Image (cartoon, rainbow, N blue to C red; front, side, top):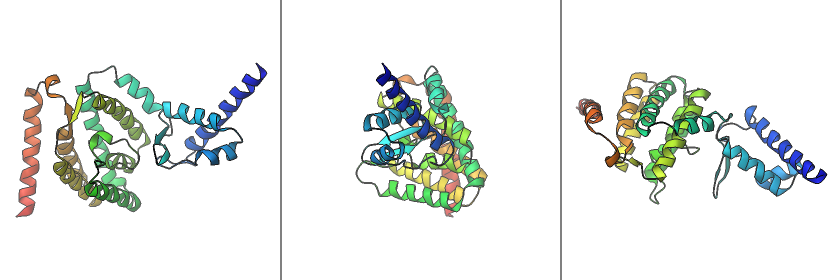
Amino acid sequence: MAHATRGSQKARDTLDYLRARISSGEWNVGDLIPKEVELMELIGVGKSTVREAVRSLAAFGMLQTVPGVGTFVRSRTPVSTILSEFLAEHDLEEVLVYRRSLEIEAAQHAAVHRTEEQLEALQGAYDRSVAATDGTADTCDRSATPGAFHLLIVEASGSMLLRDLYIGVLDVLQRASKEGRVILGTTTDTMHRDHRAVLDAIANRDVRDAAHSMALHVDRDLGLRTDMLDFAPQTERATTLIDAGYDSEEIAAR
């Protein structure tokens, strides 16, 4: 029993060590944390204890392990995980509407608050997505992956609360996507064009254009599977926004 208690204490100490580095900002959101062997040396514990702590923080939504890359800091708090569990109880169509609001708000704030480094990161994410030929394009159903275009916009907004809310929403939508209940409703070419418009607006610090471009994009990127959706109330509004977007492009081209 004493041995089990010591083991449990080691696990708690390891969890506290990792969580403290994340909460303090020593390990920033989006950073890779030290590798497993490094953590074992830093904390003075075994491999199984480190893995247990990492799994626990991943379950809280604070860490995310990407196979072949490493483990990233995903959130400074477990808020996003609690939120995703709460949102899972709600209608998917409502979650999509809530996600739309967060995306537009993030784009507007990013146009005001983004730094040059964040703009470079956005440009890099866009370039990688356009150049991808192996099925790893930065599609919107993977928007919460560290370094993804949409997540970088949320981070550039400067709001940690908005980021936590966004990740909670995306967790729900990603699960629904894997289950086939939410689908990507646009072509890759259109997605890239939309991303380019949002990126240009943020680069130019154009708040109005950032909001419009993002609204246009999210109204046609993710949607419910057709047999789950009543198109009548949404199609009219989405079509109006899409037509407005094309009109703006035509005017700019003249």
